[in-house]
Length: 439
Image (cartoon, rainbow, N blue to C red):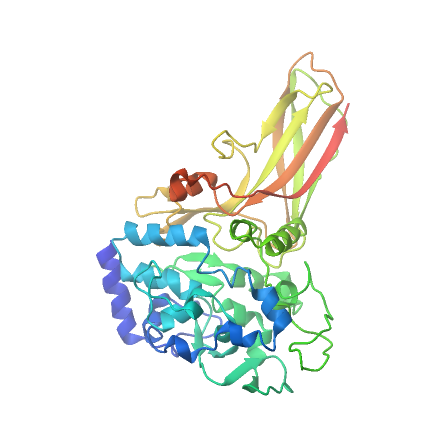
């Protein structure tokens, strides 16, 4: 299979260029990547320690963010090495993974080797200032569909920006979701299977119809749309009625925690807690000795895309339900954790399950051939889950029913497989919950 992947992709590499990848509404395969590999030298990009001279606050927000740590992300590092080893060093996999996690390193030809030993410091900074602010055009949606033009001209959303250090240019693209969509849709490099579709989820949902862009939620001081957000983009710049923040927070609490960025972990947790509501539907009484129907309604109230989103083949969002009696004894449970950190079987988990060419479920997205299931919650929609809770005869009320929506970035079993005996535990965020007392 890997030889087939290499032949197909390399054949596509020959026929496609960076600027001929499709329209804004068409997904772009990674076969456009060869045109940008080694196209520049890393020193053509401005280091972030130069940017911080004037953009102190924005640099502070970016430092420690997921964009900043896209390459240093220890989970990505392990998955990347695993993928390279699993595919015998296939360059298709190397390029496909690294282009969004170290775009400057890829465009400078500093990868391979995949361990990053030849990466410059600027390339190790992941998605850094000069990468975004030298984007001059979009060439489509997904798989790094952008045209970079490193140099002295920096592009952003202000028409009147003036800098003593560099030239400035207005870019309307930087204010649109299409700017984010150039990377935040991911398709398999050969079979075009959709692996991540955050942009598409937004595009087909209510937020896009209302004109709410990704930046309106993810480049704000807190969850939700925050306008205006007055401030300065540069220390010598004018006071502006609205500027974008550069923490660019999503739902990843794990990586900032592992890398010691407590503020970004806090912001991510705050965002997760604002994304959903949980409601246990009315229940007047329990009948011991029979099965009792419980209904729990989960609503995606605060995300402009599905819950969860991103690489949902590894993300886990699930419901934990418990029924306890008047003495505190548990009589029904679903969604609890086993001793090894795995979620109990038959629990309700919101995620995507991919299958390899044998039809077996896999977390190895580079081997994904099809999607077996996709159970997630679209924006502003709800799902109602039903449980049959058996309460034994003699159980004494009142009974407490509790429900909690929980989230973590990856299954603990996968983390054990990647990190071995390092005993890395990913944090779990309780997003939303409800509790009622029943006679």
